[in-house]
Image (cartoon, rainbow, N blue to C red; front, side, top):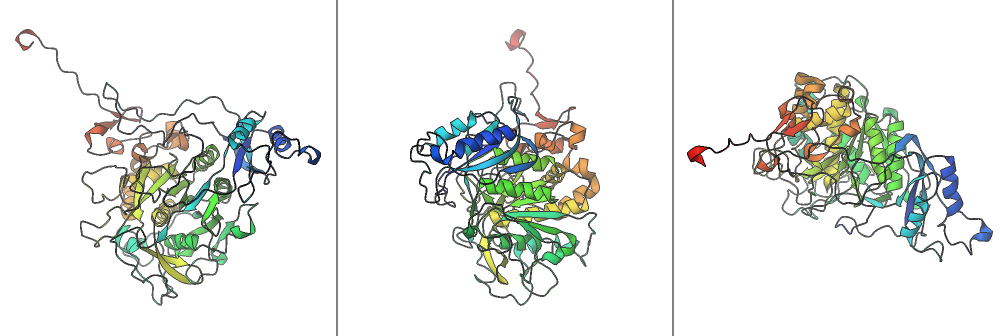
Length: 557
């Protein structure tokens, strides 16, 4: 696990204000712990007036699919990775797992409201939320108490922040597209169309695959999107207000736009075409983690992650983020990854500022940056980083995210920009690869996409904070997995290494370090700060130590 500070809501350019209502997430290890929390936060009515603790009514507890190891993180900031730092011997810190104290397993959590929807304390004599968190952490059976936080959709209408990018090929809000548009990201960049039905290299999936999209919902009934007859299902977290909405009625349009990039129906003569255009070859599971306003809470995202895994997701796609980390959400992502689910999320739109968004900046999550079309293929600007894409040392891969045309509610279409738009390109390719190579683990598919990524237009090759390892290339990933198999393309499996997939995951530049099989798996880039990296006999990447100079003797002194 990576170490983080407790959740702090920063004023990011794409975020706006924090939630007016404050709440606390409280994890518990047993029924006695749950009862202790309930007794504190829901005092008997005759004691409320004099009650010195307690905060107010809770939502129904969420019980995890299986107990989670939720460690209280040590104080610190950032992602917890040491990038480009070497000790005096020339060795890199290498992949490490921070030591953590013995922790009780967490069987579930409660969301405890501290203020009402207007931001006013529920109890006038208890207005310090930090003290209340400390008090809850001392209760027997409580494994963690931490501030709940806000997540938001990471997009904006095309050209609001982009600057000199190509204008929308369909000119803003489109009420109806009468012929299937060839969107630039899918038809020009990610290299997948030749593998579709009728293509020059048509391939047949070897297993069913489910893509779980956690977002603002889905416009069920859209003519260009899969419906329940195609296996579409969904989930709305319990305890949400009436304005939050439901999973199959997208009051925002963001989730429907993301879904269209993944799976808009092909060969129907209208609209756009998704990365996976045949609804018989995949299924959607929709988690409404964000309300119709485009915002939600970490507690709702955790509920959706748990639901995705319980309903057979192979990939979880999250075009959303919050500016602080929570232990419970990180643990939910780790549990999903260990259960074989590839978790992918948007890096953020606050570029060029270097900062972290979550869940994208957890090591078990594949963090996606955004690139633009520029002047088109075969030009120096094709694949240039979008002006808004947010750099940090957890960015892993990039996808088309500027001026992306996709589905919106009521059989409409629109052009949006954001790392939100880049993420579904990567998620859809990941799901396609999993359907073709079902024997590969999630960590291997993830590494194979890294190892086969396209080199973007940058000064030096290899990984950097802006693009990650490169731009997603579906065709190259397919060719690599076909020729080199799961191990050659993506490294050893978790059973071969003797670790869980979450323990193997490093994220960012060092993602492939555990389970390498060849030196190429350890190559990060030509920057001398990375040193000369190689795969050791223990299948962990390391930096070669320069041979010492011979001692000076005689006249050489």
